[in-house]
Length: 289
Image (cartoon, rainbow, N blue to C red; front, side, top):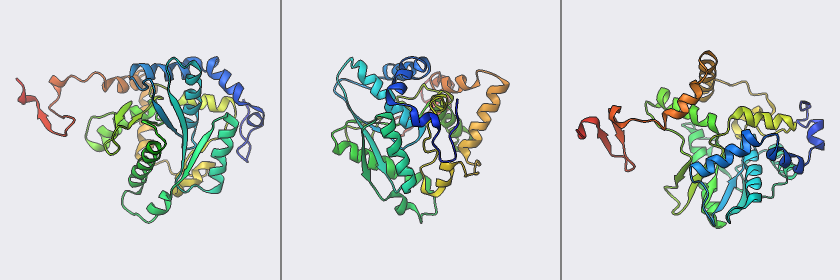
């Protein structure tokens, strides 16, 4: 495996073709990538006949792979559905935008790009700028997808994102909740969000990326663009801490990661002190005898 050079482009990447990458998803990476992608779609009922799905691409490895997996799924075409490969520009640097466009061309993904000024709008916000930025990005994606006639948006969150979110909620939020594979939009009627990468491990995504010597954005945020070139040394985020904690526990006791994931499926309400329903109403264990 050849590594990327200082310009971010490896010799292998310059020679690889979209057809080779597609063949890899059918053969070398079928078990760990495409099969798990298809399994999540079936198990969590993510796609239905005549859906029109906006595949949301940020330029990172996860969403780029998701786009290729959707293309492969479309080849099988067991029932009719449509895809739009949607890229929102929240204010990328020229270098980051060129990276996205170059990779989309290399991978054979016909992207639809639309412009926003999100980074500019949140630049001077001091309190929770990342949270506000994420909410704004999600809203713009929903709005554009609906404008294009889509009824679903697909995001590239994977298995590791799920288990990290579960543990973060417990350790930092004092709550038990998971990142759902499918949710209804609260603000855009008739729209749903799906996460078809739900069962795919991040290590397998990295293995796919590195096998072809591909170079994707590591960080699309204007405030931390330095990390796109590997220069950002800030690893003190809560998510990073949880990621490192899970890795350490898994090394000491293999099976920890799987157990965290399964904990959201094996909830026994009779042993829960209280819980909230869909309407946000709280119910206590002594309400039902």
